[in-house]
Length: 129
Image 1: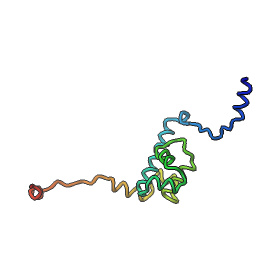
Image 2: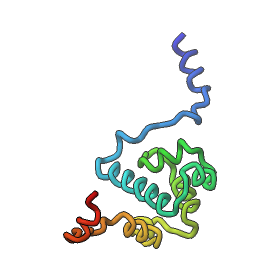
Image 3: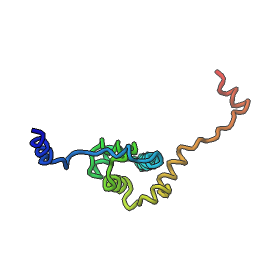
Image 4: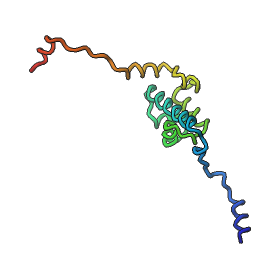
């Protein structure tokens, strides 16, 4: 009886089964994946694209885009590259990792805190109701 079960298992098409390799990765590799995902999310925001629109341009589902931006190591290189090229056509992974995109620099400038000067006594009196 066990031979029949073994034969049925061998005949089973297991090509659609997913294999989670996360436990096999080092902590540094998981951190690299998270960094890459974060940089892709930041680039998308700098380019002012919605996640849904970027996913459609890349030909992936929005849930896959979420996983890519979260740094899921189970996403394929092809999915990452399609997502990158949907956000920033012509951009390379190296350019992404080095933050060479001008929109990222503009986003950093927009996010930078601006120093606010203290109001003078005359200005404070004008604002006093």
